[in-house]
Image (cartoon, rainbow, N blue to C red):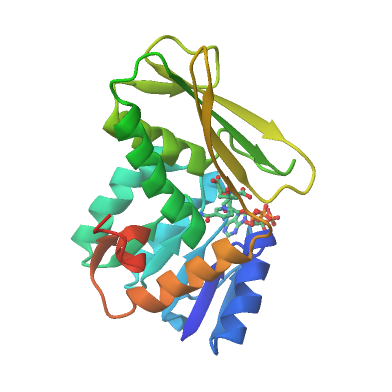
Length: 234
Ligand SMILES: NC(=O)C1=CN([C@@H]2O[C@H](COP(=O)(O)OP(=O)(O)OC[C@H]3O[C@@H](n4cnc5c(N)ncnc54)[C@H](OP(=O)(O)O)[C@@H]3O)[C@@H](O)[C@H]2O)C=CC1
Ligand SMILES: O=C(O)C1=N[C@H](C(=O)O)C[C@H](O)C1
């Protein structure tokens, strides 16, 4: 498979290593200002920056190239990307987190939220920790986790400020070299229930993105990592 890497930073380079190990060829490595012809690729993998993601995705869809995006912080344009994908009969996946572990954690989070729904003595909170170069806060993963809780509970929103009664408070910490840690806590007066995912490196994110790129070839539509990993039955 010929892969275009749109964004050749920390993730782009990790994906390159794993993609080559799996027998693929990298035909485009694009950073800001790189000129390239996207039609040289069978599939594109975008891990760039929030202001570039929608342009990169649109370019792929307009040229019939399936696209996997892991860039976070651009979701105000997500619905437009979905519409463009349908109009162009293309193929597109966005996931805030491509690792198998986090996608299992997303399901665990929703199951726990469902169990806690009527237990109003518990208040939920979330903490995410990432490296100091991260541009967005809270992380895309934290936003997906918060949306999962909102789907299954009476919480209405998330906030980085002091939370109101119906809000999930998220604390975003930035610490040197942390690949990504997410913890959800339900605290009552007598105890606390914590669930936590800790990434030990970027390899899990990168492997998930390459698996998604392999999976999407020959498909048409907008998909998620639940489709790729076959987690729809949980
Ligand atoms: N979904 C997931 O599983 C994961 C998502 N992420 C997300 O992926 C994104 C990238 O993360 P990371 O690799 O750590 O970040 P980096 O800052 O290391 O890399 C981003 C790269 O994008 C490049 N870039 C800037 N503008 C463009 C453009 N117009 N087209 C193509 N590339 C461009 C930058 O180039 P330059 O330096 O020249 O500006 C840089 O090399 C972030 O949004 C992050 O949150 C990260 C890990 C996992
Ligand atoms: O920027 C990162 O590094 C990461 N970003 C993603 C996010 O915003 O959730 C995924 C992962 O946590 C690493």
